[in-house]
Amino acid sequence: MRAATREAFERRDSVSSRREHERAEELHATAGAGELVKSLVFGGLDGVITTFAIVAAVEGARLPTSTVILMGVANLVADGISMGLGDYLSEVAEERFVRHEFEREMWEMENYPEGEIQEMIQIYVEKKGLSRDDATSVMRTLAKYPRVFVDLMCVDELGFVPPNDDGLPAWKKGLVTMLAFDVFGAIPIFVYYVASCVHYDATHDKLFAVSAVATASTMFALGVCKASLTCQPKLWSGLMMLVNGTLAAIVAYGIGHALEGGYSAVANNNATWPSSSSSSLLTSTSSSSLSSSLSSPDL
Image (cartoon, rainbow, N blue to C red; front, side, top):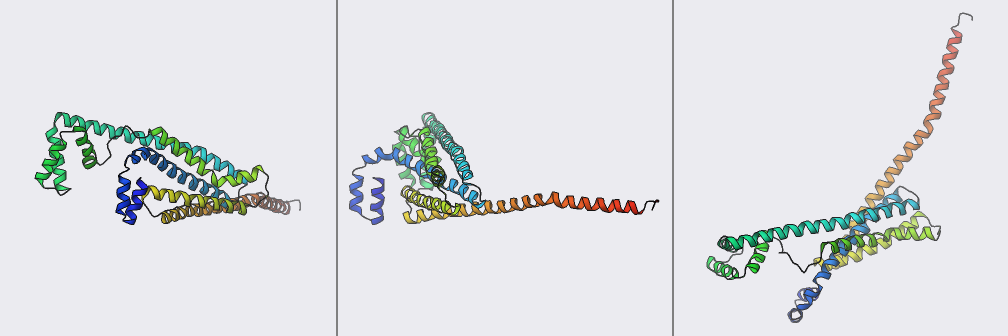
């Protein structure tokens, strides 16, 4: 329903909007799925951009295909676990904070309701623009229903949505984030893995080009999905994801190329240093021996 009502709003179609609101029960059935889609999209974007940046860095350094696969897989496993666990821990911390503050407000409402009522009256007079008489009438009516009153306090006074026991558990969000990171993050290195398995003899440039096209398509598609969640223009969101991934890849490629050039220069210097040093040492030794012979009293 949510997408349909947004489309109706964009078209300023009041008839479609009314029809969708009459089917409001569908919104509650799909609310949990929306949270999973959010974890799916953002986990996938992080995965594909991060992994392709690593591929670009390795390609910039002109390292073997096996190194691309090794570093890509290592990043998928390590970062995937980190992303999933981080999402889970942040969700748990937020839920605990929200529930603690909600319980505190409920306790204050039970023990000193007049103080809470006056706080809300003040907020609605100063910030919402209601007259004091209207704000007093509204708040005293809502105060007859403590749970409704405290839910309103959480939003207007504390600035967060009250706890919802019907929401998705934190571990599911963390798991979806990790899986999305791993699945979408595998796309940039998939072509390298296939080429390695079938022993396909392709240049680095060809493999990198195929990987870049696959990655760009994935980033654009995920950007469009992200726009559906954040009410942004879909084309603009997809292009912004492409710009984001492209900038990350360019920087990573440049760093890899620069480090490879610096390493090669150091390696060349180290390779020529022993022979140059030995020649200097031999020359110095010969000169010293000749000088000693010429200064000998026997001559």
